[in-house]
Image (cartoon, rainbow, N blue to C red; front, side, top):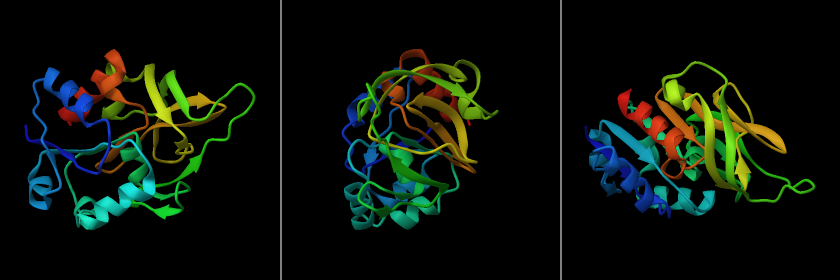
Length: 196
C-alpha cells in the first residue's frame, strides 16, 4: 500500500512514521502534489499552530490538491483541525473538508490548557475508523483547541466540555489525539484507516 505523510511542518512526524513502520508500512514525508495524488492513503499530521500550517500548505500549492483528493485522508491532531472550516487559532480559514469550526479550550478550575495527557475516548456512531478496538479506550492528547461535537463527530472525549476526538466526512477523517502515542487504541485506529 502506498501511504504518504503530507509535510505541513508538524513535529510528530518521526513517531508517526515509526508507528506505521511497526505495522509494516513505509510512509514517506512529501510536499510533492503528484506523489500525494497517487497515494492510496494520505495522512496529514501536525503539531503546532493552524495559521502557520495553513500558510505552509498554501506556499507548497497543496490546499487545492488536498481538497481534491478522493482516497482516504486522515488528519492527526493539528492535521484534523486543518481539515475543518475555520480555526480560532490565528483566525484562519482551513481546508473546509469537515463542516465544523475549531474553538479554543477555556480552562476551568483545575483544568489546564493545553489539554495534555491520557483521556477516555468513546465512539458515538458506527464508522470504519472507530471499529473494533478503536470504539473506546484511552488516548494521548496535546492540544489547546478543539472541534465541538458536530454532525461529523465519530468519537468524543470530555475535558471541561465534550469535544470531537474523531471526525469523518466522506473520505476525510481525523483524530484529535496522537494515535502513535496512544498504545493499543492508537494502533487500532491506524489499522482501521489503512484497511479502508
